[in-house]
Length: 300
Image (cartoon, rainbow, N blue to C red; front, side, top):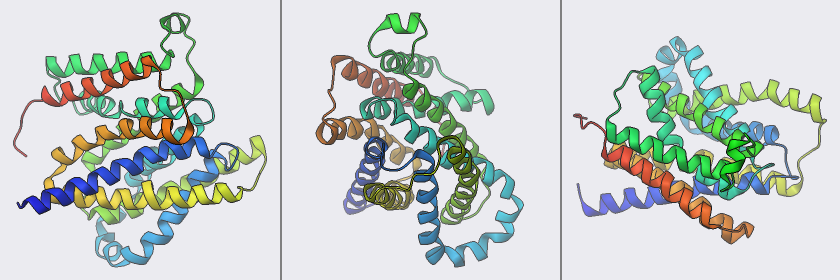
């Protein structure tokens, strides 16, 4: 494999993780501009409209396989695309982008825990230590750096939403190991359609609870950017990167998401980066790195 291929993959992955970090900023900018469920619904509607232009041949070719697994794809698409993003954007109404970004970094550890619970994949002692270190970092963020908050079971509602969202995305990620043997773009298209359909009753429920308020011009712009950058381009670039250097090496770059989120939260939202944020970010990333180093090496 040439150095140019490596550099191309690294460039794609850095841009991908920047887009996913940018989604954290959008979750805060969307407050007062577009409701969480509107953003989810319009996001996946836009993705579907674009994907169907380019993926019809793939869908026709893979349909016999996809049809047999529609229920499974609908469930995991609803978990990973609809519920995760709804809680993600709802969290933006109650907590900072810094907190969202750092807590989002815990997803790999939740994936490891779900793999252990569901798939019975063994966890090495080093991985177990890494999990504990990451969870300590999560608890520091959830308590706002104040351990007394944890003792009193007083946790920011937005932080709780993002922790639940991370767990749901971990379930989705583990479930993908049972995905049907179809092209990645066909699977992504079907799950996007399922995510959009599942968003409709949730949007109706949101309207019943809060009434309908049309997105502002900024809200429409945020929905457009969310559709193009973290939803579409980032996914395609990640698929291309995995094809170039493999899933294990590409997956390591996901650890850049909380780093980019923290940097952009300070630059664009003027959020204050406090000492406990730095300590928590170090624990989350350090725990993930330790979990990665401590995994049992198996042939790919």
